Length: 231
Ligand code: PGA
Image 1 (spheres, rainbow, N blue to C red):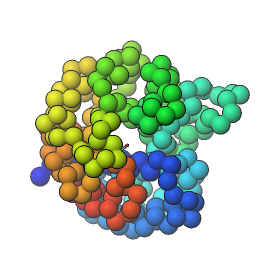
Image 2: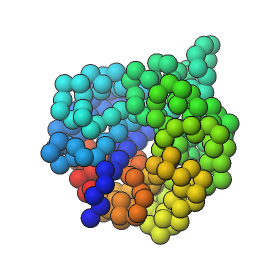
Image 3: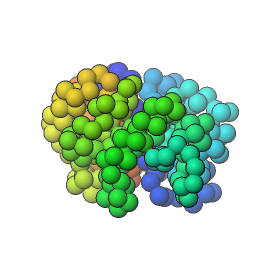
Image 4: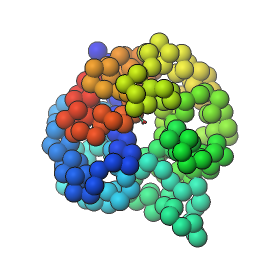
């Protein structure tokens, strides 16, 4: 059974209305028993409008010691006339982590590698820990000059996302080796793509895997809390 501290990231994507999201977050906190979970890190990445409310809810709970909030994106611009964008200057007060370069943004929203680099750089400068997603190792190479501090990467093969066809732990081990070859210990490695209760342990058992990024199975509090308690 894996023992080192693990990180469990919930990516809610563009789901839930406001009242449902607040209810689900409170329910999740109730389900995360500090005596069982406190040696791990749980990161909830809801749509950004939830962040100030969740921060408030979390501040009064013992789970604040091991639950952190994350955003699903940041603006590639520091501040200014960029309608619709949310800056790192604002998000730094609301989120510890930021998902950067998710394949859905690369695929549907035209996110370029250059934008991913700019966003990662801004996160470092504004003390947000970037969690950079990739499906091919070569997508990470342009980050080498930018990656000045410790950060997270998540290997998310396109075919595994939301499909129920998770990648095999053997392939994950190989990719992890390539990533460590590029960044050494500077990058903590997560796996994402159809992670659920029944397979999470097989990834956490791969030597060097720091945690998992969970989409669909993070939407129901009961499912996600069970994933977290598999560690
Ligand atoms: P999934 O999504 O767990 O639903 O496959 C993972 C992700 O896209 O981050």
